[in-house]
Image 1: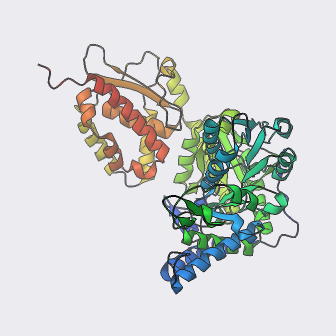
Image 2: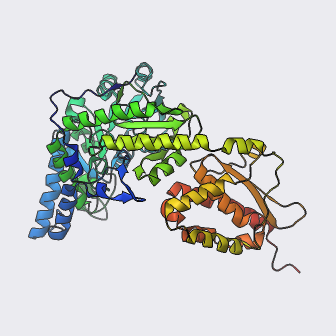
Image 3: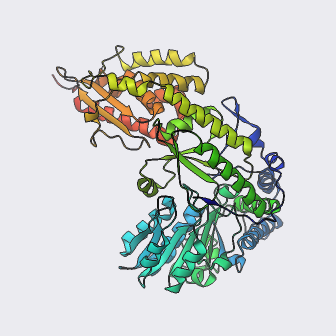
Length: 587
């Protein structure tokens, strides 16, 4: 049973409507509906105070820092270093020099992996991660392990999404050199007991890096009380600008580490025979930094502190409780991640009827509701959960009860609509001996003109989306026997299969069957099938599908992974067509 966070009872009253008024974007609409933004784990929106601080810097205070003798440069330098001091107070670092500015959590972790890891890890050494980690706290350590001969070990989780701490304690040994772990899971909201994890690692002489990206905006952070060796977080999840982040490290560790990058402002002296490096923090901040980002981050910290993190935590906890209750009431919806302690992240899948998370996210988008779908850069975790993806709502300081009700109501309608759809019965009734679809017009160009005319009368994305769904409902069934590994199309973030062949009795006519577990992808397949199935290889190669799909506006409304998946299907057909295109030089 989930035990939600228990903020201090003295948390001050929280006026969420006053907070919302500071975010102009929340007054906008999406597809004609009031915006509900529930993707805060990916990136939080920015209050006026932050936008104005960045604007004020660029309008009247910008110059390069540290080296200019003139007043404007000195002003910019002061603002940049004051921002560092503000960060140090925010996380209770022993001194500002222990707080390095980076591009974000990802770069912070890569800095430690490259600078500390390459210097201190060797064959047989062990790095402990957890199954909850974001790819940004997995891949850098894999790269280092490959180069040094170190070994990665992984703390397992239970079915609720809690770390199995007994397994962690058993992993610790004299070979353990580093433990790198997230304070909060971005995919499930699990709050990890990082103080215990750090103490156990220190007891056997290992260092600990904490990925605090999902924590710092939602609770107090005290790196000295935690005794963290390294602590990383990003500004954009903290209501600050993108492209700015922080790596905290204990001075003794940072002093002993070699620079991560070379260039200006990180040197003491340079000659062609030798270079000496600057003191902390400059040693790790090569080149012109994101000065405006640092200014904006300081403004975000000031703004959040003024609200009171205890009040913020209580508000978000109440939203999570209500959302958990409301979504659990929807028949066929299964929550993923019911850890004992959770932050404001709620993930789910559809089990009855089965609905792809992509379809859920797209349907919610048409209602103006922003949630995240996919593997959330946590593919090992998805494998452990037995799913390819989840849908995720993540709460921020400006979300309110109406947002929760909008989400629950829209999801209930998505499930109800799926139950009314006869797709499963229709597919089951179609014989598996179905013929491959033939050409619907003389050439892909002719088909494209028909599709273009159809889409021109559909003025907005909701209507075009519905048209794609209807096209997908008419997609010829693909025999289960063709859904093989060889026919699997990767890069789509959906289960997509495509079986293409040259029509028997012809030399160059390409035809194909395809299927997917997401309705919107089935619609895209239907478009592709109308364009190419039954067409001659040379005509397929001559047609620019990417430009045509952009002309339909699909590039504006499909995610990058969805566009990549569509391009992967088109490329597979082009590769087959290339094998059978008649040789123009043949007699």
